[in-house]
Length: 114
Image (tube, rainbow, N blue to C red; front, side, top):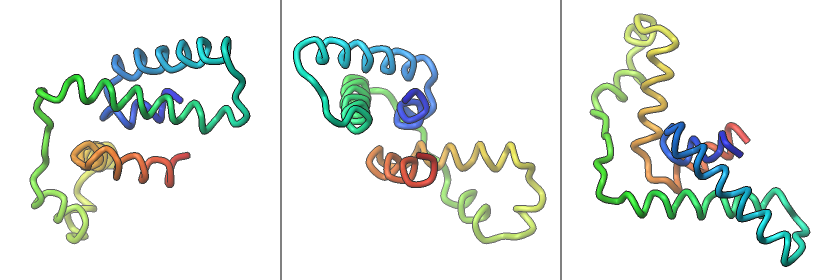
């Protein structure tokens, strides 16, 4: 759950920890009143909603964007790919995911990692 929220919140550790704890607190409170048949989808729904609430409350913060030329070079130039190490490549891909709209980022994360 933490990993999903962490990705949804642009790799922000502190916010992901806070939202993860909020998710389980909400789940606990909800389960006191009602029962849930499918726990996993219900948890993801709470996590998504809590993450969106946090993002919308911080709308005024600047969102970091990356130059398209770096991304194009990463994708098309084989020489560039061979020159950079795996850590740098991973950093660029994470940054690219951060620049995506949260809905697209969520779909990619769920498809490839979950």
